[in-house]
Image (cartoon, rainbow, N blue to C red; front, side, top):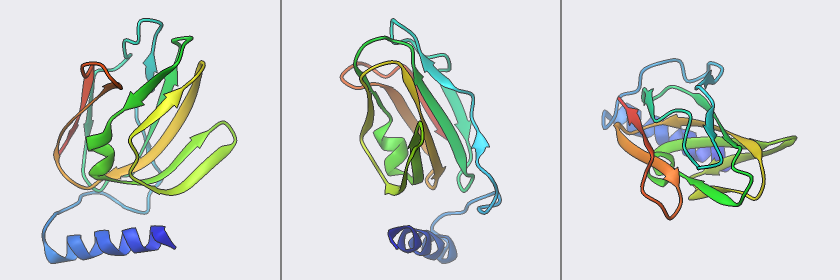
Length: 136
């Protein structure tokens, strides 16, 4: 039910002309290059270019072998986050969230649609940002 409310609110914003979105909102998610963090917590990609209104799938993978948190709070606060999946578990109608914690090596898939242009930093929670999402 919450998903429908968020989509309805997004539609109202688009209809009112406060924001414009490009792309097909009913299409399959566009897969972004995997974002892999190595043992030094360095990312495999440092810049992602996104478009408002486009549905994306981001795979965040840890090869760090230790506990850490992936964070991109401003991006996800300015996006409709539809789903997070980890192995065979899916969380739907997420809304926004702060970070994903990795206790061991593994991967999480985040399905989202940015709704506000801007530059949004990402990285390891508690450290300086290591990359950015540029949303146009």
